[in-house]
Amino acid sequence: MSAIKKVAIFGASGNFGAPITTALVKAGFEVTIITRPASSSTFPDGIPVIRTDYTAEKLTAALFGQDAVVCVIGPAGVETQATMIDAAEAAGVRRFIVNHFGWGPGFRNLPEFDEIGAKRKVALERARQLSQSNSEFTWTSISIGNPIDWALRRFPLMGFDVNQRSATIYDEGTEEFTGTTLAGIGQSVVGVLTHPAETANRFVLARSIQVCQNQLLDAFQRVTGQAWKVEHGSAKDLLGSGRKKHREGAGRWGLDLLVYQLYAPGEARCVLASKEDSDAGLLEIVEETPEEIARKAMGAVVE
Ligand SMILES: NC(=O)c1ccc[n+]([C@@H]2O[C@H](COP(=O)([O-])OP(=O)(O)OC[C@H]3O[C@@H](n4cnc5c(N)ncnc54)[C@H](OP(=O)(O)O)[C@@H]3O)[C@@H](O)[C@H]2O)c1
Image 1: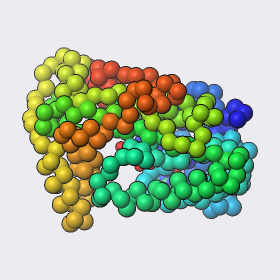
Image 2 (image 1 turned 135 degrees about the horizontal axis):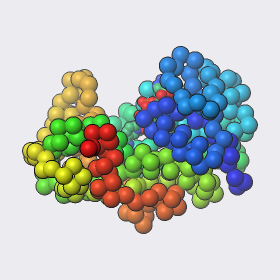
Image 3 (image 1 turned 60 degrees about the horizontal axis):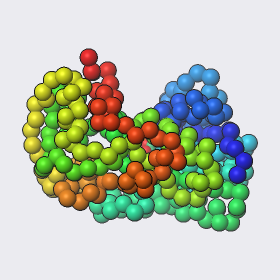
Image 4 (image 1 turned 90 degrees about the vertical axis):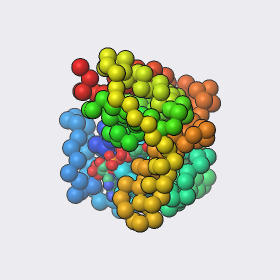
C-alpha cells in the first residue's frame, strides 16, 4: 500500500480528536477537518475546515482526494458513522479509522453496555463488508483501554482527586489495568497511518502503561511531594450503585460501572494486552511510568 498523506478527521476538537489532530499535523500529514454546519467547535488556525451536512452525497464530495479518514466523534454521533464509511469508500479513500477508542472486540463488558456496543457494531460491520467487496478500501479500529491521564484528571471516581490531593483506594488497590495517554492516543493514529499494511482490516491494541491504584497513589505522592488523604472503598459498591442508576433510568450509571470494571478484584478485566501482545511497538507508542502519568494527570495543578 502506498504512503498515506492526506487525512480527513471528524471530531477534531474533541477530547481525543484534539490531541489526534495535533499529532497528525506534527507527523507531517496534510490534515482536513470535517465538521457539522451547526457545530460550535473551534479548530487550530492553518488547518482547512469543511463544514457540511453529513449526507452520503455531501460527504462523498467532501472526502474526494483524501487517502484516509479518522472518525473520532463523540458517542452522540455514533449512528452517523455508517454514512461516513459509505461516503469514504465511494470517494476512493483507502483507510477508514473506525471510531472505537475503547476496550476492544474481546472485552467482557457488563450487559448494561450491550445497547451502546450494538450501535457501534453497525459501522464496524459496514467497514468490514466494504473492505471485502473493494480491495482498495481498508479499515482499522483502535483500542486504547483507559485514556489514563485524561480520565484521572477528569473523573475523581477513578480514585484520585487531583485538586483535593485525596484518594479512594478500591479493595486492595492491586488490580492492574492498561491505559493510553492522550499523547499515546495521538501516536496510535499516526502509527496506524504510517504502517497501513500491518494495520489493515483489524483492531490494533494501544497502551502506554499497565498499572494499579497503589502504584498510582505512590506516584501522585512523589510528584506532589506530600502525603495524600486516603480513604478505602469497594469496587462491588460501584457495581451496585451503577446497576441501580441504570435500572432507575438515572444518569451517570456508566461511570460507576466503568470504574467497577477497572478495579473488579481478581478479574484482570481491564488489561487490554501485555506489552508484547499489544501493538504499542508497531505503533511506536512510548511506554510511560506511573510518575509521568501522575504528572500529566495533575496538569496545571501540580506546583
Ligand atoms: N476508552 C474510554 O474510556 C473512552 C472515554 C471517552 C471517550 N471514548 C470514545 O472516544 C471517542 C471520542 O470521544 P470524545 O470524548 O473525544 O468525543 P467528544 O469530545 O464528546 O466529541 C468529539 C466531537 O464529536 C462531534 N460530535 C458530537 N456530537 C455529534 C453528533 N451528534 N453527530 C456528529 N458529530 C458529533 C463534535 O465535532 P464537531 O463539532 O466538529 O462536529 C465533537 O467535537 C468516542 O467513540 C468515545 O466513545 C472512550
